[in-house]
Image: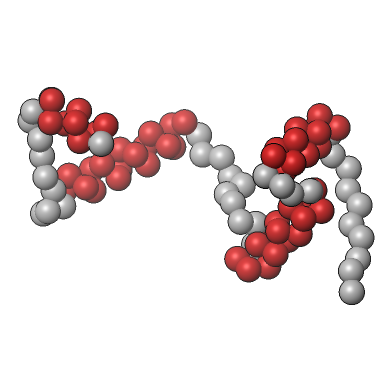
Length: 89
């Protein structure tokens, strides 16, 4: 059994999304059904809806780095070339 859902959206947004979906071989109905199934599977919206402030993101990164450095297994590198190689790997 199927049912219909009607909703309004911005025309430009709809056109942009339809272009993307067409590129991946999907139509709006199929994409929306995938979205609904994912909501059911995860028990909620399958992506974050809250936006952290830039300040909060920096603070979170700082706290994560501080925690990593405090770890007894932390490894350090004083060689900029090796550090660059590691970061670009």
